[in-house]
Amino acid sequence: MSVLSFIAKRYARSIRKTADRTSARGVELQQETFRKLMKSVAQTAFGKEHGLSENTTVTEFQQRVPVRDYEGLKSYFDRIASGEAHVCWPGKPAYLAKTSGTTSGAKYIPITKDSIPNHINSARNALLEYIHTSGKADFLTGKLIFLSGSPTLTEKNGILTGRLSGIVNHHVPAYLRRNQMPSWETNCIEDWETKVNKIASETISENMTLISGIPPWMQMYFDILQDKKNGQTISEIFPNLQVLVYGGVNFAPYREKLFNSVGRRIDTVELFPASEGFFAYQSDPNDPGMRLLVNEGIFYEFIPMASIHDPHPTRLTLAEVEVDVNYALVLSSNAGLWGYSIGDTIKFTSLNPFKVVVTGRVKHFISAFGEHVIAEEVEYALMTTAADHRVAITEFTVAPQVNPSEGELPHHEWFIEFEEVPNNLEGFAAEVDERLQQKNVYYKDLIEGKILRPLKITPVTKGGFIQYMKSQGKLGGQNKVPRLSNDRKIADQLR
Image (cartoon, rainbow, N blue to C red; front, side):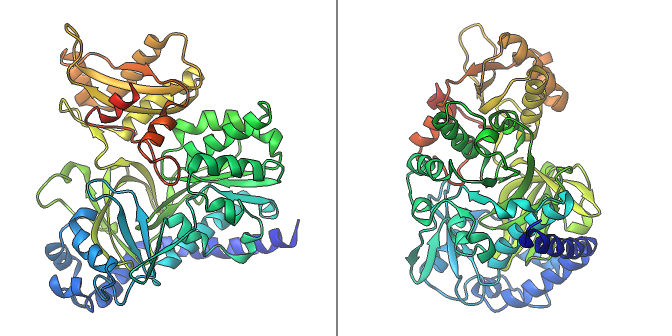
């Protein structure tokens, strides 16, 4: 065992004890976090405009501060980006994290000197808890790759601005930086295809032990490596590869193909980061639930999805949540975000400690016929069927077909890029449909009532989703293919 591995295991044990103690005090620490946040927001323009003080209660806060997404808070973010101080948090932010927007175009999320440790320490602690649980630390002596956006930062009215992954890259601890890949110059390449090809060339002869990134871009990296090595498995190229660290999307749809590329099962660690904060990480590789970070300057609220469209939706605190209920995640934080809906939905898998899984996006669903099918349901239906048939899925998305060919009932159309298309595609589709009916009673009623016909699968040619993302200017980085759409914009492009 190397000295670094020995030290890491000792440190990991300490971090685990602290994390367990913190989780046990989750409700209490959330109350403390709220009080500290109110003391700070009272000094800001936002606090004054909403009548907030250090004595404001949670109930008063919920009455005075509505739940809003980025568009709802954009006027404040615009003031911050223009250089104004004390808007949503005392002073000016240290960074602005630039992300892809929807109706607002590019979004600029503030990251303050108070909130940056949440992003840095949480990623570190995720690896340390993995070391503690698995007993494996030798990967620290090999090369570690982080498939991320460019670390190049620009200045916007005196505030450094860039992609979150690029900002975080400037804070990688020294003990990891010496083993970090790719090179700084390669990491600064903006064009994703050029960048991944250069990363593959730089790393192909190295002792890679950890690979981190969004699963579809990991797969793209693996495909390029295998092309360069005449089809060798990733384990043959990197025999000491130990762990994949991922976040941003459900791993299940990508698992089989990624492990087929690797040539064996290896450990995985799931993270739940966003530009708005680092919320949770998987503390045990054998438990899919992620430890919710309750003492990181973030106060959480949870809206049951049953009330998400109400004018005044139910807003629960950590003390009020239940296991196995879909909630929209809302946060207020020391980054200067208040009643902010990040757009993700979660479920608690445990309340002691508090652990969550990400179930989808608030806006990603199909309800063209009143069925309200969500990502968790389609992913379950597809991945259980794919596992039964030993079929690997590269990528997929689902859209409604409201105006089918004459004489045909409306239906859901599934666009799937298979590693190899199943021999009996109709039988495969029927099994997926049956499982979706089991998960969603409204969908089942529509099928049985002959309002909808069972789903149809349209195979997508290999590389089709990559070409689609490239055509939208969203290839690489933190960009993901939406699993569900309530219209056919993506479907028509794929066709």
